[in-house]
Image (cartoon, rainbow, N blue to C red; front, side, top):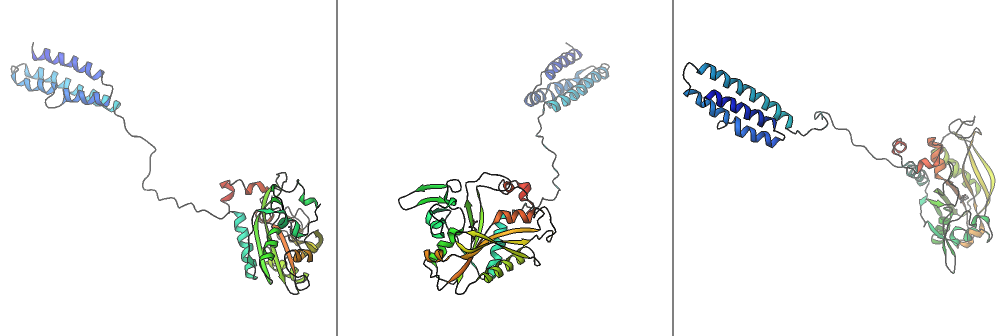
Length: 340
Ligand code: PHE
């Protein structure tokens, strides 16, 4: 067999082998067998020196063609079977995004602001349990035995023992009782917390929400002190130029009782969506602590008097932020929360 024949045989083998390369490993096997210094192609090249002088140019040319061809197809095939780690193109020179900071929930932030203002007027902060007994939530607050607020429709009852029903407090006025029972006047205190009512959920009401209660007990406290305190708070919190109106109302635990409206801080009384075109916003219920309540809590009503007030935090937040559905405050949707 001449070298030329052997070159043709090798070309056939190379064609077959290169066609059967399927993986990166196959490609490497092919390279080690044919293309390295001790491989088949070089072996034939080495034998070129034994070819008679006059045949050398021709044989050399054929061999070169084979060599060029095999190198080309091999490069192509190897490229095809080589797996590369691919992924999104990342620009490593881009600057970092800043850290995404958290922020206080608007309800928490509002409670904090209210506490700040009352603290500056000398009020302490107190808290009481969410699960209460009937006495603290109703009885000692002068609710009659058959008062409709005790009704199943309003109150979530948890259990009842021999002494009392156990329930989820329906207002933070229960904390007033605890504060009066455990402290001696003068008492200046605000009491934020969650309260629970068995109400249908809607855009305006939830079965659980927040209230802030206020209590001031001392000698000679009058309705004028109540007015002054509420107005000072509201002028600091909402609007320095606000006007007020005190409407008579009824709560079993205050006498006299009132509800307090403030001229709308947005439209200044001319009428807008927030005040429902009335020009007024109701800010809280309040009154002079009923003598029966003082007595029930161990405070002598002949020596001391006081006022109490209470308002709903969610309503305040909705007025201030323009959020028109109370449920949005509890969905923890970041698109809402990031605005605060
Ligand atoms: N507890 C009353 C309510 O839930 C509010 C209130 C508190 C009224 C204190 C007067 C005094 O509606």
